[in-house]
Image 1 (cartoon, rainbow, N blue to C red):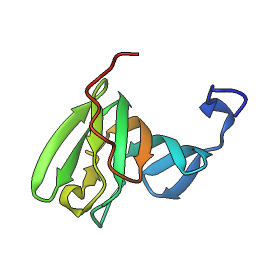
Image 2: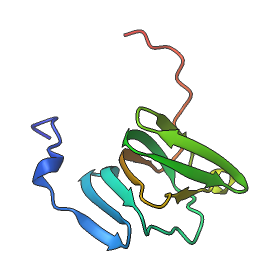
Image 3: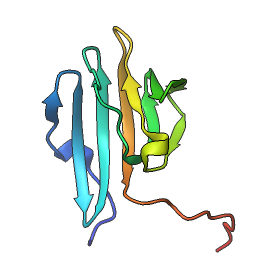
Length: 116
């Protein structure tokens, strides 16, 4: 990769279903999405995939098998992959949410030493 800058403004929006669209950058197995949820989005099944997200705009809920958590602009979310942390996004009527999402295939090792 010659350039380390991802220019989402040059990528087309992909709209796979009502209330969701995204722009996708992929390099090998690494995937980063600019993801927008809006009214009408309905996630019928729980998602077992891992994600790390930064909420750019809006407010929404994620249901984790009976537990509901609320996230808003400025929040960072880490969801490990696996059925123990399966989840569904819930978007309130009239809400629009913009996220920067990194897809996690496997668990991230515990890193506690930030020294260089």
